[in-house]
Image (cartoon, helix red, strand yellow):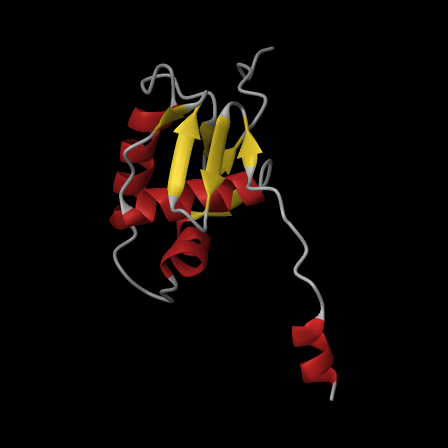
Length: 119
């Protein structure tokens, strides 16, 4: 009975994840930066969507492999490569990333403020 009632409830509109000029529309599989479309691969899109839903928290490469790829094991360099490629598409200066930060000894964190660490 509960499952029937759950299905009968109207769907609640959820705003697409957005921060720092980046938005993702999971239903349309579309991502934009400051209103301009981004050409992202499937995994880059999933990684960006994950970061937008979980800002400010540091995730290890193992966490990202599990949460984004759905794998409990694998070559962790896959995450590193995808982070680098995603930075190339979303950062103003990929050599000095301000949004997708490396947290030394831990992994990566999405910082929607985009401020320098010294700010």
